[in-house]
Amino acid sequence: MRDIQHIKTPGHTLSVRVDPGSEWEVRPALWPSVGEYPIYDPFLYTTMTTDDERNRRFRAALARLAPDRRILDIGTGQDLLWAREGVQAGARHAVAIEVIEDAFHKAAANLSTLAFPDRITLLLGESTSLRFAPRADVCVAEIIGSLAGAEGAAAVLADARIRLMEPGGIAVPHRAVTLAAAVRLSDLLPDQPVAFAEAALPYLRSIFDWHGGLFDVRLRVENPPVDALLSEGAPAEVLDFNGDLQTQQSTTTRLVITRPGLVDGVLTWLNLWCLPDEEPLDALRMQTNWATIYLPLFDRPWPVEPGNVLELTFAANLSDDRVHPDYQLRAVLHTADGQQHRGSLVSPHHGGAFRSHAIYWHLFPTG
Picture 1: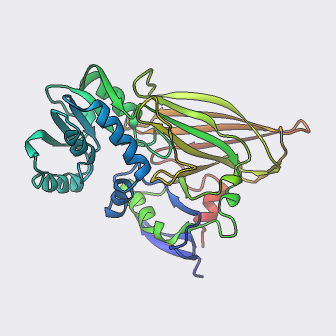
Picture 2: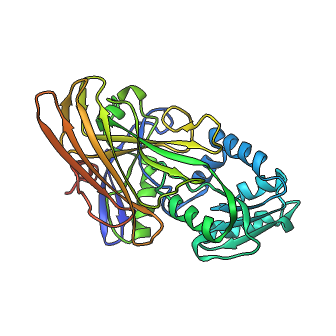
Picture 3: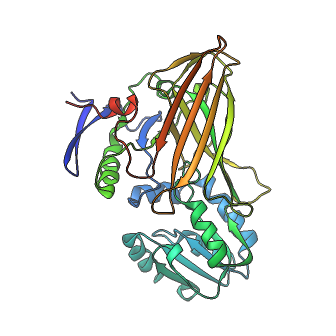
């Protein structure tokens, strides 16, 4: 069948349910979440460097904060984007750090072509393991995930504030919040199968190859219809990069159902402020490289009516690499007839269960 394709993974030939619809249509699409893994390719870099909503906010922050200061660009990428922009905005010097070796070598080649190569120092490695002097006055780190903390921003920037930045140094972005709302996955993919986009298959393979095994990848939904939401969005994860930055946190919130429907999980999306006084980037309602993430809670959809409440506990704890968070969700759905339906999800950065929820059995069928 054309809607089932196979990919080679370590020790497995894995069946994957695929949407045979056109990749060129502007329509919802299901992908694995990719930003938290070192699998960047030219396509992924291009989606970031051409993201106007993102870029104008970071540029505005650097225009205000960079002049006559030393800046640190963590996760500079092959284009040295924010180190280069910072120097052009008037920074005295920029230190650019890149952990992916291929991207580092491309960045080094790009650095040699710039008119001011002596004003950027390029370093290979993890920022949490490197040292340099003098320290930075401003740190710009575009390591924000579609789940705000998924790429390790909290741990990385908490470390940078202690070891790599001057006292009172400023971080860009200023704040990132993950919002959550009640949904049913099939409503996010209307009039189409619940299946991965065909173009997503190489990224699934790359994630499993990087890890060396199978696990339940987080589910990225591109272009979801906003009217599929069954509740308003509420903060589930808050990262204040210039305030009380928590590397581990747990938040409990009540999602009040606003229209009748069926619910089997939550949709999460990013709000991002590069400066405290600006309109935030909203990844649900704006065209940006950040997408929404669907997190399953129940193995079957439950009917809901306005006024029903989904009580959601959303916790982030550092994984064994001490940088990327593992997420744990617990939910209780309270319905008008007094019933309570309990759901949960454990979503580690890597490892953990494979086919822990019915949706993963559906997406990765056996046989």
